[in-house]
Amino acid sequence: MWRALGRLVFDFLFNPAIGITGGILCIWNKESLEVTNLIMGNGIILVEGIWKEERCGVVIANVHSPCD
Image (cartoon, rainbow, N blue to C red; front, side, top):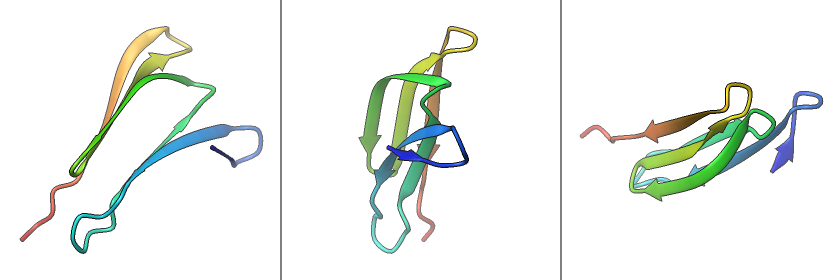
């Protein structure tokens, strides 16, 4: 967890590189998103949670597929 941009508090998940790619970084504001599940696999990060303002479920997906 790190503190940035004044009073906003963020958390993150990093998925390292596959081959020569740079990897995947997913960042979210902990004051806005209540994380309920984190899934990480080859080339993917999924963040499941509750968007606090609306009290609705969300899934954030970051996907990377290297080009040949």
